Image 1 (cartoon, helix red, strand yellow):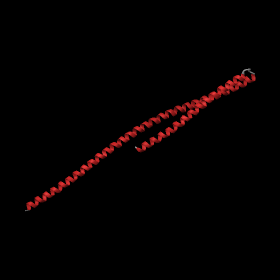
Image 2 (tube, one colour; image 1 turned 180 degrees about the vertical axis):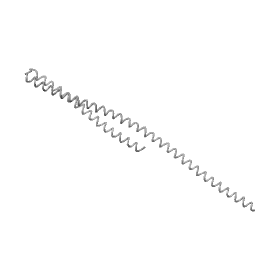
Image 3 (spheres, rainbow, N blue to C red; image 1 turned 30 degrees about the vertical axis):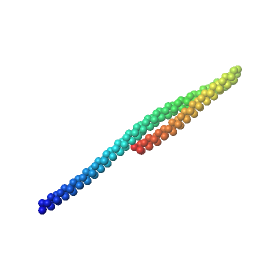
Image 4 (cartoon, one colour; image 1 turned 180 degrees about the horizontal axis):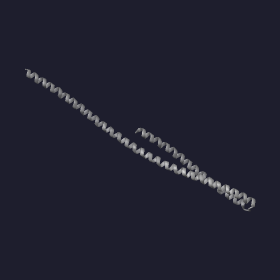
Length: 159
């Protein structure tokens, strides 16, 4: 009888261990599913980071391009200012020449003076128009540059 009890006890212990093994096997399966799910989510996050890095690169390229354009516009504005200064100097030189000619009594001096005024007004209007256009483009580029800088910061923070 002791033998039967011992066998029964061993059988019960075996059954308990078998049930425990099945329970651990189920928990291990659940952990494996969680790991697989986390790996999928990690892959999606990595894809998002790669996409954000790509967009960040594109925005940085746009900012670099805009910086180059701003530099060119600033160079053009500097050229326009120099041109305006040269034109004003020429105007001063012409004014002194006009005064001399007027004192000398040149007959068709009045006609030449009127033609000169018209040409200078046209030239100044053209320069003012170009400068206003460049200022507008510069303001627009500055606004877009600031916008892209804020997008870069947002993408960096999202990373």
